[in-house]
View 1 (spheres, protein in one colour):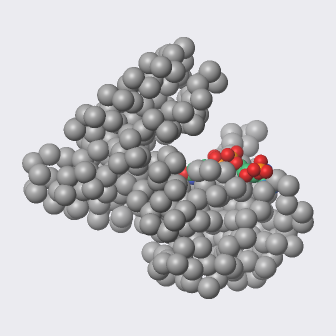
View 2: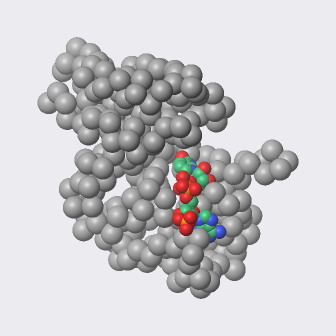
View 3: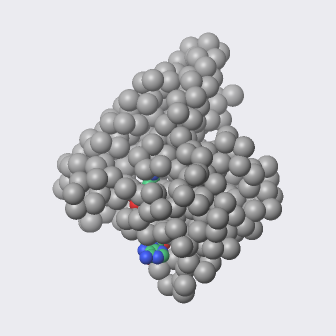
Amino acid sequence: MAQILDGKQLAQTMQAEIALKVDNFFARHGYRPGLAAVLVGDNAASQVYVRNKRTACDKVGITSSLHQLPTATAQDELLHLIAHLNTDPQVSGILVQLPLPKHMDESVIIDAVAPMKDVDGFGPVSLGLLMTGNPRFLPCTPLGVQQILVRNGIGIDGQHVVIVGRSNIVGKPLALMLMQKANGANATVTVCHSRSRDIGAITRQADIIVVAIGQARFLTKDMVRPGAVVVDVGINRTPDGKLVGDVDFDGVKEIASAITPVPGGIGPMTITMLLHNTLQAAILQHE
Ligand code: NAP
């Protein structure tokens, strides 16, 4: 039976570490790192995500502000707000909660966030620095995946990691991170997506499988080599209202050596990495 990689517990441990560092920052500078959250529209899930992120900020002593705009907000108005936050010295990091309303161009908005405040790590400068092997802000979900492995003593060096999903916020940056010539990386990485053929044949070759596609219980036991480590990034709501991941947890846990649960796996790690990045942003801007 697999070891359960408890993201909730690890997130608490790491948040306590971050809180200490935030206190040290406050002692040195007399003010606290600050996160500005921007929420456009009334997407219920986005509201919950932003609330959870702000609650986590409170817990570690990071100040947070919420800038809530109606769905019909013009793109220029949002760009104007971001320009203001870019120059506000109280704001260390800016989080623009996605998705944005359909009339906005997400890439234009993401590009507008000052690179030194890009705590989501989605901007072209952050991703370019990662690509060239000199990362500044790493995207929070991939960083959470890497940390849950590293902090549980699961070796990545030389391992074959198969990532299912190639989105700009999870699969693609995770592949770049894990193939870096660096500690907690040095993996051989394969990336699968919706056009990949016979994904099971590929995942069966993996030492570590990460699934991030948004398809409930996609990865089944027969797609996993006995003893592999399985990380489930997916968050899906079943018709009966249950929250499940992209992995068939009950089946896969019988043969994997370690597995992350949903909920309580990568979700809390993602929020914690946002706190980490916000503290890093404050340090970079002021030290
Ligand atoms: P996304 O932007 O929709 O991308 C999904 C990716 O999965 C795409 O690359 C797509 O392939 C691939 N895909 C979809 N169906 C597939 C299939 N049947 N077989 C193989 N590949 C398939 O999704 P995302 O934003 O990366 O999110 C993925 C999941 O992670 C979602 O459930 C999301 O809610 C969750 N998530 C969780 C967290 C967290 O904090 N825990 C954070 C972010 C996302 P193509 O590129 O070919 O279309």
